[in-house]
Image (cartoon, rainbow, N blue to C red; front, side, top):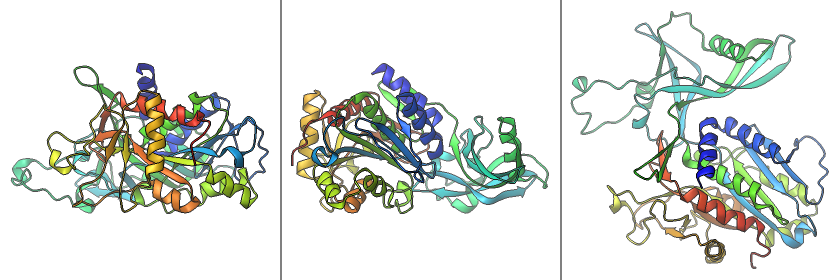
Length: 429
């Protein structure tokens, strides 16, 4: 577990945007012998072959072909997660020159908790698209990798009621302070200089970008026994790493697949999101014949891995009394009668059996009946491709904050169960 958490924290520290998360996953997959395939090319898939493909640089699917037999006879053991997290994104024309300060206008991505973004050491990362000096278009990942921005709080002397009630106006309160520069400062020119400093050659002009702010504080273990993990983007890079680790370590002879989609935090409706066709397109190429593909899906299962709400000791009344997951007490099966989660009694039973074989405890989460329930890629995937789905996750605190908290034992235990799941000879049905 110690080695697992060390690798997990290294991944979290490097995966500062969905683009960087996918780049880190590609690096680990290639090191394990997985072969990258481009969607625009013809594919030649071999028995026992291990492959991956990406879309938009922010979503990835990796899979292992069965070593013997046919996919329609064995089915696929699938795990799904998402690469995006709530954050602040830099606007297309972000420069604001006020009172001698250069600021950047930002847009809130997803359902972010905004208060924790104030007074943090922030940096900028993402993807930059540019024209090269030879006239061709190109792109590169960019990470300033140092504190360059901050959103300062207003002093309490100027807002005496701030501790009683504070409503954040995202348009006026959130522009970040980048420095003290003259009014000729151009953000795209700044990006060009930063890319050149990082060794990207032949840049003529920066044309566009997809950049996010992130907290530079490194992931850490916390607690008297180091029993807690604190980091940015635990929702849901934690599940991406757990799924990837399980796929790499399972050594399965079965068909196994991991899909990590972008854009879950904003509804998943995009070409790279779970409500888009990426997974269906890959499955069509694995089994082009429709009837064989349907037979395969009928023997398959998807585990949608996305973090769960642990019961907060200061706010335990926000949970159903019988369904308050504890940190470090095991992975959480998420259930909702209105299909906000896709768990069924069948898929729940399969997971409980796998966990029991690994001697891993299992918890359940059901939202209070008088509160609205969130959702995951689980119901979307079930509806899009017609496969059995289980929603499960690691319990955490401070979901959608700039810094989140989980148990140091739970991710390791979920990975153990997923390894057994990938290698399972039969999933019932």
